[in-house]
Image (cartoon, rainbow, N blue to C red; front, top):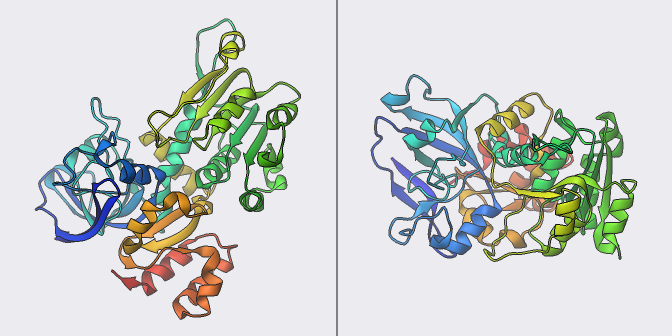
Length: 420
């Protein structure tokens, strides 16, 4: 079977190509990919090429398919897995397989599996790691976004606190405590706010910072003060870029106690140092945003580490249980990952989008891999619709939903967009 896919050959060398997939083995699964969301991790891999920890050294000869936040439909199941999976079944994949001794992952390391493709072969290692997850929902985009949501779920679970006089780590954020999400109104920050408000272990105070008034305004329109209050949380949005002493102001919001949990959603030295400065006793700073620079460093107050028991953790991806939790919360309607999506496009927009991702404003860029379409911002659909009836129809759907993506929008796109 032929597939069309975006493959990486080297640093900043991504190519959309059509090629033949090998014959299916008894321990493999053939599948079609329907949607993939583009992650900053793919941008980092594109920049670093073979220097990236997950990308093989021989990609110039044996390129791998990029994209690791994807969902699709199973076409054919090899004999080994026919007891567990079937043709026609929808799926999502947890790329963080957490296999001992290897960092290999779909979307980085494999020649025939990745999210930015029309068809893929799922190797046995994915099923053996229990990372191929059946999905029962109607729309594909929630399953795609269950992977980035699992990263958020994992970060919340990885934070910890230690009761005084003990050496026991109580895992998870402090229930009813003070939480700050710094640089927190990008796509992943919005997901973190959603999870903080709607999971079981909620903070009492949730402070969200950024330096962009427009992004803060959008976040407030999604998560109102009244809605947060109904969930038992006091939420505050702050533009720290306009403050002479942001640490002092944020600290005062807690009555001088400081923050139990601080999440840093941008790999910026000053943001990390702000997070360190506002930690309270036994406060935990979670460095969520991975840097591109392997020599990235920031100052940390070790006086407070010693006397106030502050500590730091870092997480890179979630695990399969985190992904199952995110799918469960979506299925129950408690979280809505569609709030993260600000752009949609086809497979032929992947190369340009990936290589320019930091320079494209907005949230998640959602790709439908079987269509041909430039990357477009949902907020621009009104203007685009004046010139193109296809965009006009799409605008009619998303404008009714405050420009938040939906099952109806996905159905319209798949039915009316140009096939690739």
